[in-house]
Amino acid sequence: GNSVTQMEGPVTLSEEAFLTINCTYTATGYPSLFWYVQYPGEGLQLLLKATKADDKGSNKGFEATYRKETTSFHLEKGSVQVSDSAVYFCALDGSGYALNFGKGTSLLVTP
Amino acid sequence: NAGVTQTPKFQVLKTGQSMTLQCAQDMNHEYMSWYRQDPGMGLRLIHYSVGAGITDQGEVPNGYNVSRSTTEDFPLRLLSAAPSQTSVYFCASSPLTGEGETQYFGPGTRLLVL
Image 1 (cartoon, rainbow over the protein chains, first blue to last red):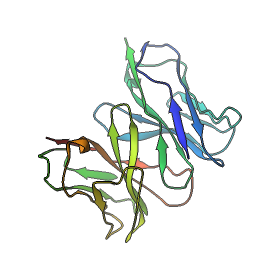
Image 2: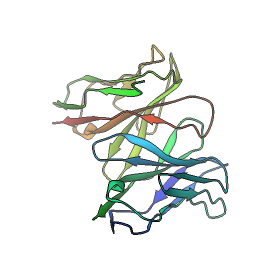
Image 3: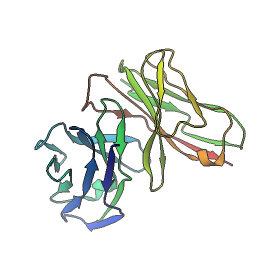
Image 4: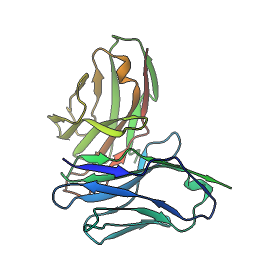
């Protein structure tokens, strides 16, 4: 079946540091891949997505590239801010309606 | 647009009590779903619906019932609450146009079962 594995947190970074959160997946076919973000006390919201191999999703300075050869979708940001502190979820959609989520990675950015 | 709304925000139940978690969306989305979020487990799909009158089970359906009588509403029922159902519950919706659609999440309901 489909599954997503992402790096365990928590991740603590200083402001302006470089961020990478690793995500790998197992799926049949060619799923769509997502990063969702959950700010404290809120629901999840889409951060970025990619629907086919070699696509790069980007939003708010975050980027992730759909790498079929390594079955990965790593999230990166060149310079994190305190306001980026949140939980980040990698997810895949292999069915057209149900998402498979990773366990989430908590990020804390300190001033 | 209010998007996806959920009520209540927080609820405490005793073991054996029943309750309904409400979810509504005003985006005319065909697809709606319920997830539960537990520490270290990510989000797991409970039930989903692809349209009014159509529901199906997800990964962890036991102890939960759903129905979909309108496009807008998708309530989740706990018939006899158990401590293992203590969790944060999220409702989501999306258009049903194929893979890659963004799912829109509600703010969540935090449930504590004593």
